[in-house]
Length: 595
Ligand code: ASP
Ligand code: MG
Image 1 (cartoon, rainbow, N blue to C red):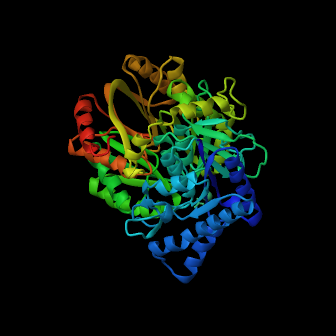
Image 2: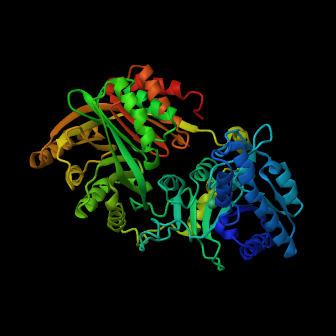
Image 3: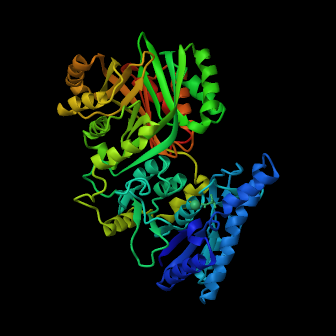
């Protein structure tokens, strides 16, 4: 018998009428012959209201009591939802996280799921009940109530779907699905029929809002197909499937996003030697600052510049830590910019196609937008721009990649359902075996790619269109660029580094030189560098991955020349002869989590 999980977010259970509508949906699904597990959030803005109350009675509420308080929101909605189903003549039982057996660690207000028992749910389902599960909550080993972090009901729903081997996890919300970008910001934004787990991971962490990013990590790890749809639409209008395949194999870009409140910090004149990045990022981690884009470019005189972005709200805390670290490592200066935003394009197709980055850079140049920094990963290109130009930048890339129009060769909704079904792990025993630590960091592997060369361009004037010129020239020579890193150096000039296949390094350096002749700049190429990468799931939400990498390499005395990060991968470039020892160092550093 098929089993579906239906999750109703706060707006979909905001009042009695909406609860009854959700109840009808669940009951209807059961009558169609499915077993049904419903996961609900707190009604409307209830959680916000509870947070507000807590802050009125206490300046600094204890996390344990916060969880005790916030978990009540979901307890209200599960009971009401069960009653509403009874009223329709159905059978339903509401359960709290603890009653289900959702075990988490003890980090209150941001707990991670460790395991979920299925016995009680199975029995209740077999007796013909609809299960109404409280989202967002669990219990630790001492039965303290814990919560998973704001927005955590999505994660509860996908986790339940994973352990129960559900055929589908439906996420009912107040939007029609996953859009090419936020439709409230760009009117041309279009609902996608399919998005791959990887693309969604990137988009969710870029603040695409629709779903809690940890829920997508579960989806990917346990191959749970997720259907995001609008609870306000009464027809069976499909939403978007988040599953194993994207909307189109041909299209390079599927979606784009703007992350507004970023701030950039640059540490200039860092001695280019092992352990330096480690010192800086350890210091940031020790004050709990999450670092986003990290880019290191070769500076002048054997010194490097390291830039990264943090949330603007954490800028002051970050600066304090970085200033201390900078003097410890002997860097010359720390600069920052508080008013920047990040515009990113994401697409599975760009992993195999060239000419995506340069199109993005050209589109920005044509809108007269200067790019302050660039980082790329296999399926994402991100550019940092002045905040006042953020919206214009988003608009420019959305239209450049024609995201408002459906792709010509489009994977249909039905195809994607079928692919999701096929990909689903059918071996329930294997899933259960992995449940011991459901939300642990999973590292798939460590890899060495020594087929690339590194081209660097320093002393380039910092003005719109420079990167577009460079990468158009490279792409015109039919060269596929892998990593791109651009930052601004001490003298206000831009530094640009990128990697290309070794066989193309002369051609690429030539193309870069021809551009440098026109605009200024010095080209250097280093044939045969090693790219070391760590791939896995949870790489960014488990913040320690970069640190572990830097630590492993630094202990082995290996200098990092370039860094780029994404949701599923961290890449670093090291000297060719350090490739093998670097690989060994990373294998050791991640030995306990490689699965
Ligand atoms: N009620 C919780 C919150 O508002 C969990 C959720 O809605 O997903 O954050
Ligand atoms: Mg929510």
